[in-house]
Amino acid sequence: MEIKKEQLNIESTNQSPRNGCFDMWNAFMVKEATFSFMSDIPTCPCTAQKPPVQLISYEDAKALCKKEMKKGNPSFMYDAFIHFYIDDQKFDGKQSSIWTYPDKALEIISHFSGIITPDFSTNADFPDPIKRYNTYRMRALGYWISQQGIPVINNVRWGTEETWSYCFDGIPKHSTVAIGTVASNLKSLSVRATFEMGLNKMVEAIAPSTIIVYGSANYPFFETLNKQGITIIAFPSKTSEAFARRKSDE
Image (cartoon, rainbow, N blue to C red; front, top):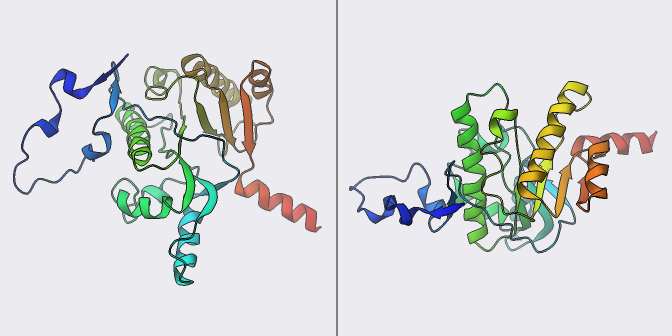
């Protein structure tokens, strides 16, 4: 069940802000959004009409933008979706946070085909409020980007069982979603089992038509999902691509 904030008469924008107030919570991002009933997570639509042809990290996208600007090419476009399957400090650090400086992030994102929504960490050892907040930020920022006319695909990140009550909220059913398997330690059988349980719960909750995987999809559970009619599209990580190049040069 989804609701709009104005239905509950708690939309903060209905009240005149005091002079000097600053929207430090980025409420502007979710204006007109709908929210899940229990967890209050904003809904982020999947606005991408087709899967990406390639992915590029936000870190590399920033570097490419800087290079093109130096060349005097401010209107360049690059046919790749930006992903955030990198260390959080590379896109959520104190000086360069996409949440704190969203307009600067938008300047970079606008030169690319679209984005996979940010992968703000929800590690198992994080306090529950932080995991919920980071889930909120994934959807809120993705919703705002979608409202700028940029194609968006939802990143799905789950943790252990206690996160399942909210971590899939705000993602439309039967849509294309993306997940990352990089740094998930899936070689560990116990970790793999936990990952698979969360993956199956995600499929049950969202019933995605397509799952984009950043990293290896060479696991039996992805093959099972493919047989069930879910399209699996895997993109190798930057590390695995570099390793493959080294092997080919030997």
